[in-house]
View (tube, rainbow, N blue to C red):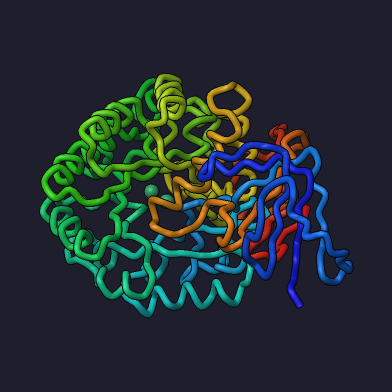
Length: 432
Ligand SMILES: [Zn+2]
Ligand SMILES: [Zn+2]
């Protein structure tokens, strides 16, 4: 007997197929079977055969995809596990996420990749992909076993948390990755310039007496990498770009038709360096919160279509660590469960993007970057679907997070837009 799920009367937004209209979505045995006004075959179905969801007034979109999260397993399971991170993901509307390899030990061979996949299967929540390390031990010296990791299913490579400092190593990494048709992603930050900076270098770091990280650190590495990509012409992705100058470098690279993509986080759109004024370590992130000018440049870039993906950079940390003084506390914000609401606030509410524009940057576009056939409601595709109530208003409450960590500066923020249901492979894995 076929197992059917009919989502009726919702506003179906499927940018990959140019759809934005009120209609139904029929899922049969975990696959999208029909999208349109007439999905019924005329035969009466029992409740057992077909579950019907009334999505009137709701948005029905391809399952959201976040290609930049940190799940801390193996090594720091008290901060997050694949299981807790996966639960947070579906609560945030995400049917696919990509874990960063800077775990402890890092993901640097095929056994590590398989370990992540196995843990994800056991969690049975969201699809979990992983990237592998570019260099062994994330030390920036010797290339990791990228070929084996790609064969095991790693979707790309990065030393995220750090940038690859040595241009010769980065050149080799790009050459090597081009052989496997995977992409290299970079946390653009020249350590020599960033030094021991804990926030953006400028007026606020000066008055707060905190060591600043000059935005040139990002620009410098991004510029260098683009020169390397010009030579190798292989896929390159700039992670969490945060400055107006980075936007200009990306613009020029795209104008030159280089295979360069980039992503932006909610915190670089909603917060500025001024947020660090109270020495609250929940605002300590890497790359640091920048200036109003940078925020405006990122928003303009999104409006212009220069940005390819919206990501959380979900970076869970223990309360005890974040309670350390600003200098000593770790970098990062845990935001997977409020990410959609944050992007709505940053981009939909001020009219920078419309709904299809936002959904495209959270579904089909990131899917293309990681090279998976996801992010659409096309007939025959695996049924990953997110149902969103765009009008629900509420306060972000970190005590309700499924994530093990609470390092989130948005607690108490009034937001609009709630994930109602998250469907993965035709199964409802989250219901509000
Ligand atoms: Zn990073
Ligand atoms: Zn990261």
